[in-house]
Length: 419
Image (cartoon, rainbow, N blue to C red; front, top):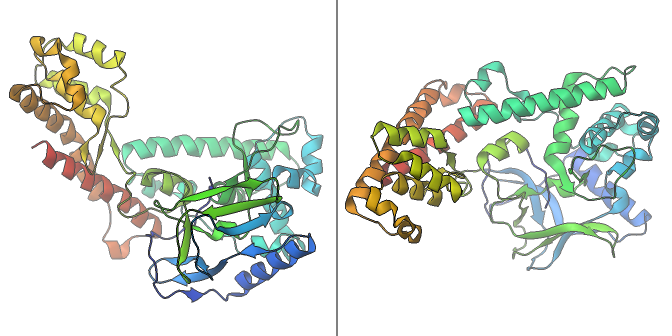
């Protein structure tokens, strides 16, 4: 499934909203380059798409023809993919081969982008590099102030990712001790690869550190935007020698065509791609099992040790979340088990069918839920007070605010459902 994304906008799926063809010099050059190079390589240029601007969304890909499920919307010849093979056959690839220390695929592709960008229009890949974003709105660019606005769980994840990138940058500097690679330049190339690459599996290489991350860059294709409801088939076709995107949806002429990056919540989309989606159905607020247990203890539930054993034996303590539908299944079952008296505990499996075991149990389980929701709601309120007025927010602050507001909405809905 493609892994790529645009930055600097919160977007939602729309159709028929008066697209305007993108005639910028860089886009026109890229389009002509893709067609010319494909033909020169012996491939027929296959694309129903044209870059365009859509009202309220920004740049995306418009179809020039009506499409039905099963149609190939774009096909990129292998020689126009930037893969590890591409890098290893280049000048910088010769340096990679001479080193004993191995780099990951993402590090290698990042170095290649930096090397080619430094060549300017002398690079074969210049038409592609010229349309890459100059900056990103991903976690690597968060200021100290913006970090304080992140929800705690997202902050923990971001800090871990920042450490990973620092290590990746250090390894690259150690790899080329004679080269001066600025941290900001490495961040640019790293997030270009991170947010715009597609899954592309090659055999192992003696020059590459294996980390299970198989990827490549696919010029032109990565201008497609993400929709949570888009259905596509994507991958390399060995028979045609091309990386192909096949839509399973129907589109009218001039519609924007979408792909799906996967079933990601807004935490993931913000961290990895630099955007969020309004009303993302994959959004959920994670609850800590320990907080849930402490809430039960505060209400003096009995036989807690027995209940914990039961919950853990059946792996019910994982995936404890709240969504726009309220408590997740596991979380609902856990609260009902914690609220059981001794007699109910012997027939605990009744609740697996979604049944209420008793009015007393249901009342107490809702009380436990309100107890553990309270600190999360307060934590969310405290975060919201930190944001400046929307008119004064930076782009990143607006994106973070959308995540905090998402949490607020889910917590409020869940509170109402247990009240």
